Image (cartoon, rainbow, N blue to C red; front, side):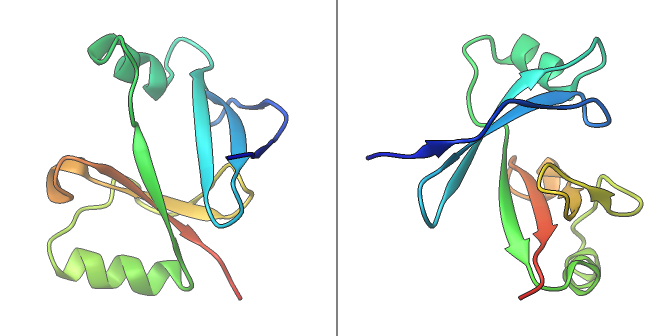
Length: 110
C-alpha cells in the first residue's frame, strides 16, 4: 500500500506537530508533542508505546451533529468549534461517552 505524506506542520494552538498520510479514501494523522502542555505528551506518558489517540469523523453540518449528539447525552470537550489541522471547524467528544475513544468531528461542506 502506498501513501502520500504531507509536510510536518506545527500547530501550537493544539500543542502538536502533524503529518498526514493520504491513502486515497483514508487519511492517517501522525502526531508529535509540541510544547510542555501538549495533550499528546500526556497521552504518551500514559501510553509509552504510543497507540491510537483519536478518530476523526467528517460531518456536513457540525452544529447540527453536535446538537444531535449532546441531545443524546454525549458531551463535547469544546465549548465551541476550533479550527483543526485541515483549516476546518472541529470539536472533540468526551471519550467516556464514546466507548473510551476520543472522537473528533470535522465539518466538511460538499
